[in-house]
Image (spheres, rainbow, N blue to C red):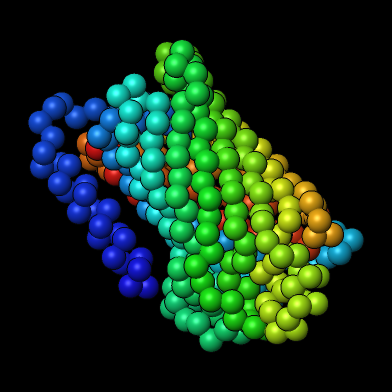
Length: 305
């Protein structure tokens, strides 16, 4: 909990400084700084994104849907980037993730107690990721990629409930967007390639009977989500969108695969010259092989200056 409060204060303090130093006319960045667009040299982008996933249904081994006791998964992702090249084609940054999970029928808001009894609840800072953003083609400013290496920093607790993947995760995201109809509409697409490195669950069990096998289900696999967003801009300071995602977890040696389909909607609004608010909802409508069929509620703040 202290981590979340400190990070929020850090982000908002940067926002306040930027507002005090700004002398130009207020200009919306909702349309200009899409995920495809990189920062100028010396510019900063801080995003504080919170997501709550809750589920009471899950597919089984043969992908039939079953009712389960409610499980809840809260994730805070803090991203900090800055522009380092004069041609606005390279950004560097860091990503921090903290999680809080609760099990065995607890209500969805129970995650905000940030308890850690190892069985009915787990919480803590889980990953730190150095990251780089690149615009590979000078003449295509609306195409970019982000590559990050997520390093697990949480303790491996034997026989505990799930907190996060216990693996090094190398993820590269490709972004492309196109604005049309007099800047009223925008299509945004994203393709992710994420490699989970680490000891397979089978090998981990053979070497240590007390290891938490559940946190190694994705080791030695490729995570491939494909996403598309269609946005409408009622004004330059606001947007609403619908989105769809098809994701695959492809076995590369762990004898486990999954896939799911998610649909959702959301909106963004520019509160101040530098601060944006984002909210969204997602529903996993189908899944294969022990995939949860739950709901995701998200709220984010972004300071760009």
